[in-house]
Image (cartoon, rainbow, N blue to C red; front, top):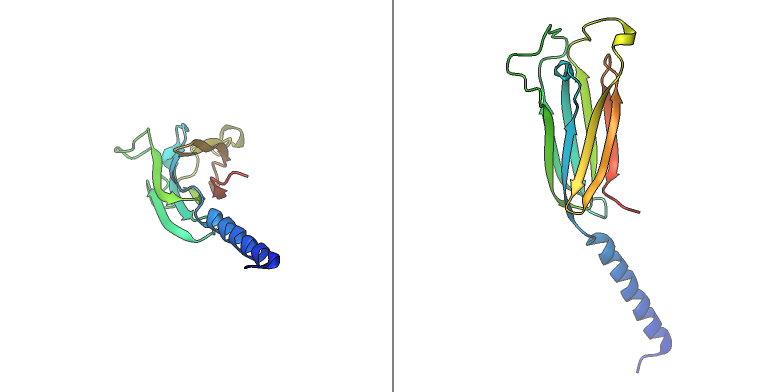
Amino acid sequence: MQSFLTKVAIFAENKVENQHKKLVFASMKRFNITISSNFEELWRYNIIAVCELCSADGKRIEYKSQESTIAAVGSNLSSPPADYNVERTIVMESAEGEYINLLVYIVPHTLPSTDDIYQTKPFSMNIKVKTEEGVVLNQMFKINQWSGDNIALSKVGITE
């Protein structure tokens, strides 16, 4: 016959074990990432996206990257390449995990067509992340036409 204290200890141990299982085996989901912009001079930028998929306990499950390179930095193109797709979008899909860390680099390879600061206002870049459950992130970022930008998003998909 087990004593009351032994039963309490076993109960507490099982509770901790179950909490750990919930943490480690939390609902896994696939992430669909879309990076887009309707900026008509997006052809002046190279876009690199890096995605790290993690488990609930923070371990890396998958690491993906995708890039849309138009020209080498410093190319100073006067117009988009002949084969440039104006519907340019980066789409990535992950394996199953708990959350993602996402880095997006927007790197200018050609300076704006004018040096007039008032005509070279920041443009919008949209990052949308969906799972089977719905949209977990839909955010618009303002990108400086002269310098581009680096966007870092951590723990996308974790709901508090």
